[in-house]
Image 1 (cartoon, rainbow, N blue to C red):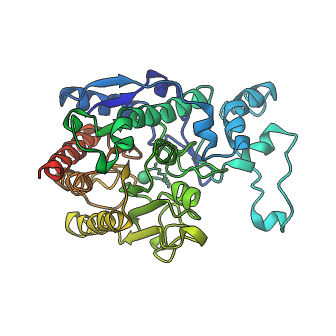
Image 2 (image 1 turned 180 degrees about the vertical axis):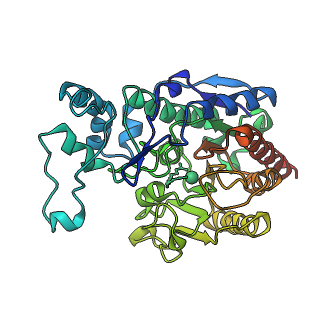
Image 3 (image 1 turned 90 degrees about the vertical axis):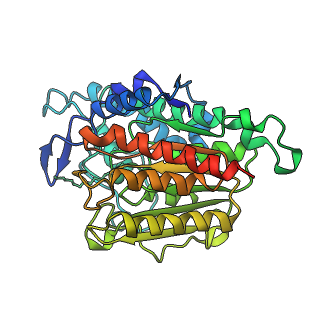
Length: 373
Ligand code: SP5
Ligand code: ZN
């Protein structure tokens, strides 16, 4: 299975997180991409350099205003002089124009760059530095290049015969950094800027997949991806994650009663888990998600592959083992449809690479089993 990445992904240096008003180091570090890449090279995955994303593929799921904001706000911040007064070189929001503040009025464009920061960013932990846009764009490019690699398999009609099908790439992995699943159509946060998974899913639709499933096994609820597709019946979004109702990020979304709306009614599935859940419980729920995708008739799959459910991960209380991630891969691969896995979270540097490699090995094995007559 090829893995796609771009060295520009290293240009995002988060500068930490403002956590309860205190600047903390933040776990979403450049080294993450290095350890994953090393593990995948060691496991023999061929490396592919991502292409630049078509801007239209970004605005297919995100608002042009958000994309423009992400592209330009750091420059505006520097021009505004905030790096010297008060001495903050990262874009940090301070006023949040919430629905409650606006009371039904439309969102105006704030004149001050320091005010615009809060119009799109919903937390204080997702800072923008000089290289953040380059990296976020490169991450989306990696997801799109991965879709391109499985593209022929997507557009292949099931009734068109399978001559040569065995030689097609049906699985690809995108080493996306920064991650994406907390980014919504017009809002970002949770260390995410653009939803790489949503961008990939929409690109699969554009390439001819009729029904796409996005299954998210990151430890946190993929609120951004959920909200992007919440009203749509052509993309199923399923997520298993630590229960936001038990006090975990993203706190306000990810509950089981969020099942989709309008055309999307029934096409959203959330499975919140108690803290300390381990392999047995977690894998049982991954199996549920896979069953949902099968019942949905998904003909292509995006896996939001966060490995922060790992037992040693500092950011989540779930307790999934490396074998658990491999088994999840087998379950997901057993759907037997063209699949792009995109990297989401995962912060325990000593085990991050092996966990991703295990998940990908499982995906290949599951897909191979599904392909056997
Ligand atoms: C992509 C992804 O996994 N994003 C995770 C964002 C969740 N961050 C929540 C952070 C909550 C505060 N963490 C403080 C940790 C102190 N040890
Ligand atoms: Zn996460």
